[in-house]
Amino acid sequence: MQINCIKCGSKSIITSRKEVDPKLVQLYCACKNVEHCGHTFVMDLAFSHTISPSAMDRRSLLLDLLQAMPDSERRELLRLADQHN
Ligand SMILES: [Zn+2]
Image (cartoon, rainbow, N blue to C red; front, side):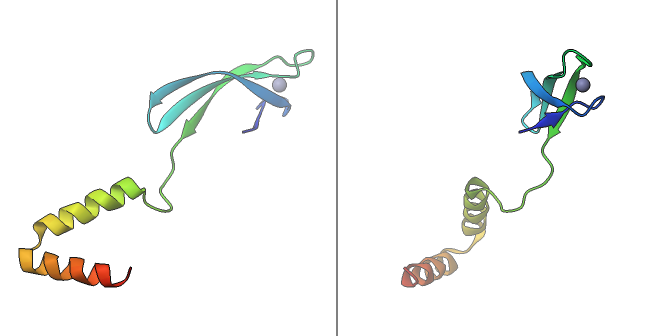
C-alpha cells in the first residue's frame, strides 16, 4: 500500500499502526522526503462496504434459515441440494 505525503506528495512510510476497532486502523506515517519536508502524520484506514459476503456470514445465515424451517421442508431442501453434487 502506498501513502503519499499530504504536504509534498512524496512517498511516505508507515511507521506503526493502531487498531481502533476491526473496521478502523490508524496508520502512523512519515514522509520520505526528509530533507525538504519530513512531515509525520496519521491516516485512517477504514472498512467501506462488502462486495461479496464472507463464507462465515453465508453459513450462519443459512443455519438461521434452516433452523426456522419445518422439519419436512428442511429435509426436502437438503435432498434437493444433494442432487446437484
Ligand atoms: Zn512530505
